[in-house]
Image (cartoon, rainbow, N blue to C red; front, side, top):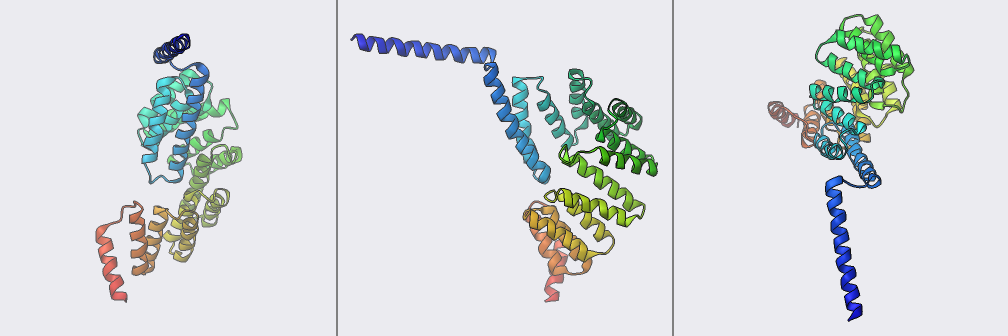
Amino acid sequence: MKLRYKILVISVFAIITLSTVALLIRRYGLPKTSRQKYITSQMEIAGSYLGQFRLNPEQPKLLDNAMELYQKILKSDPNQKKAIEMVAEIYTFKTEYLKAQELYNKLIKLEPRNMKYHINVGFFYLAQDKKNEAFEKANFAILNDPENSRAYFLRAIIYEKDRNLSAAIADYKRAIAAAKKDEDKYRNISIYLNLGYLYSRLGLNYDAVQQYEKVVKLWPKVSEGHLALAQFYTDRGLFDKAVDALNALINMDKNSARGYYGLGIAYLKKGEAKSAYAYFKKAGSLGAQVDDTLMQKLAEQAKDAK
């Protein structure tokens, strides 16, 4: 009986202890170490979703998954700067710029000397066509950090919008010189692509192709370089080169809806209805929006070609 009594007492004590711990967690949250581990693990998972979306922007559900996790993190720690920043980035992807800007203004209050936050607010000003405010943010960042690649990138875009193309090219080059390859590859890719587009507008085709090829060489698994190169060749009637660029993309990503859609465009312009139909159909099966009337027309032309 004594043994049974001891077991009963221990069991009751354990239940009371666990209940007390559960009550404390509900009232005060997880212990600091446990909470930090929880936040770290959730940040890693959310970051994985966001990284997948960057590579596959045709899958917006990945953004929703990331947002759900970041919101949980912020419920646990409302001033978790990285989570706030990532939520702002998701709003940016969703083109909800005012919500994103509000979060970056909060981050500036938490860390006023972080130039990254100021530059991001500058980009949001630019999205609202507030070029003067954006220009002030770019110059403020350059003054405080003369090697800031993103600040030059922002200012280059403003110069380009103002048709000051020589100043834009100079700042794009400064941005490239200041950029570190692994610092933020998605931003760095945009610098090369923007400079390529600018060269293309000026008719400097060789220089434009060089920028696109650098993106493909430095980041072969990112679709934007392949797509930019293919678009450049397609616009100039160099359809075989466009096909080569798109096939390189598809060899890297078998589920690239944009890659198959681009092939559809290239073969359509080549006058090869059967191939165009097949690639558009594949793109549609992967989520791309393909015009039904065009598909019907191509199907008829493909039959006549037999």
